[in-house]
Image 1 (cartoon, helix red, strand yellow):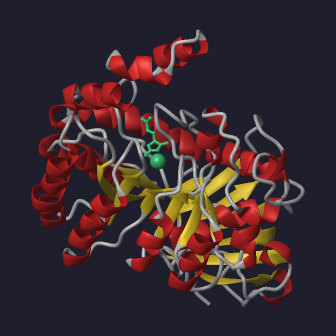
Image 2 (spheres, protein in one colour):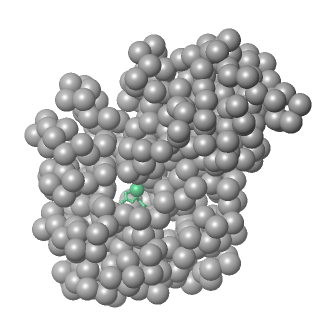
Image 3 (cartoon, protein in one colour):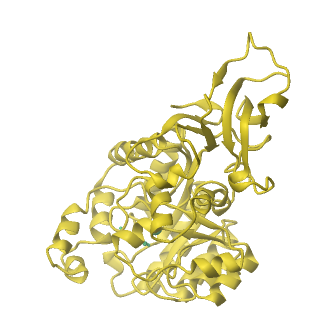
Length: 406
Ligand code: DI6
Ligand code: FE
């Protein structure tokens, strides 16, 4: 057979649900790539004949391969820092006082509006490289710190440029309904009209969004306002997802499920009725342990109910300057286990196969012939090590679209 690359002598955590062992493990395995696809994967002993002289071959030396990691929820493009706000809060200034002084999300909006494309590109590119260095091959990036037409488009254009210039695959999400911009202070309905009547059609026409998100919360937008956003997204043919039930229960999970949404994210305050709606719609639960940790949240997402109703659970970084300034998906694996009591296998599913589902992909997140060759080779003895240890980077090599990028 003709291959472009062959990887020999590895253990593969395929994460393939059709393989009944834990992690879908194939030990003493090999894997062959052609173009950007995995074309063969299985036990070494069954590897088809190929031309050893002309085919580049690497030995995994008995180490482990997993699918490239997928971060399905980030706010990676922004300007400014909120370190002073972090410090002020720890010195006893309340969140409300900080907001009254122009801090919080609004301070990031101000800095992002003032930044040019190049500045946003350079800072986001560095963050992307940090994710890549820990095995991330696909990532979602939201707008939502522009909150006016030009600035929202600027953020999405930067995400698009990053997609063209950085090896990581990027999915872009329009999050115009993230927070109320200062100029609409007492008229959130008028702002939602702007989002629906002007921003979203422009963004859709420019092809700058793969999906639409909103923040359905007391400090964000109401259930009825979110419905308006989703109705508009539907007419534009864009899939939806939602920041739901993070600080209270506004029945966001049912709403996003009603629109056959990709995912409901955060969901600390989700109840069984919401879980059932998600199960019926096939909406993925996205858990964000970084925000839970930074906010010192005590309400745990209903993991047992999600398991009971077979709702797939993805794990993401929610990387943002306010509530999750943690540029590491790998640390989220550890936090999903220690804070949310997921098993290391469930956590790894959360950043591979289930994260792929949360982005609407069926071509990645699993190692199987016919799927994309996005692969991470790790210097570990067992897959649980990925969630167990933090601070030592075990990534040995990374492939994106069949190309070695590290
Ligand atoms: N939920 C969050 O945790 C972030 N956005 C959201 O909708 C917070 C973003 C920020 O504080 O900048
Ligand atoms: Fe978020």
